[in-house]
Image 1 (spheres, rainbow, N blue to C red):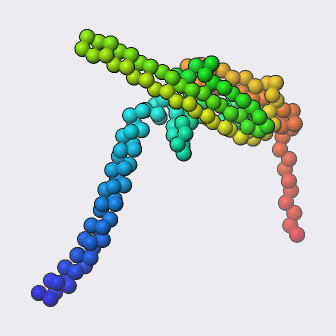
Image 2: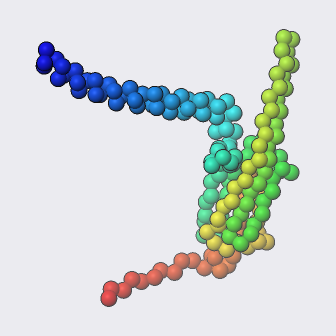
Image 3: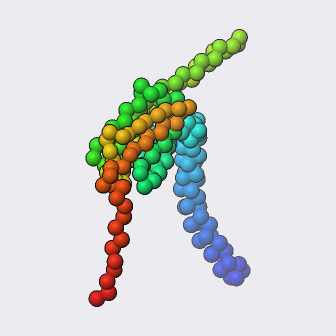
Length: 165
């Protein structure tokens, strides 16, 4: 019997630690499930937006060529009149608001769904931009902003030699 008691002690200790951790694990899993369920309900990834630090942000890509910088942002459901683009120093700011409504009337029901929200993105540009050659186009929910670099910015890189001392 003494041997049984010794083998039961480690099991009891292990199960005690597990029993203390289990409620916290279950709470963590439940919070994740609830949050994911809530976010899935508003379908943000499908809409081209995502949450970051409590703010609604448009998904975007930034690319650079030797002559220009191009920013492509997903803004489905946003009209051109609801988008504001500003350029200040080396920062481009995109602001907008999205308002949409879907209404469906059938014989036995009437459904209305609305979604809305404001978004803002600030992009630090990698070089100096020619303010007179900035172009923004919106087509099929995709905003494309093309920013021409200044002549100074297009001069190229300067390679710095490393000297051993």
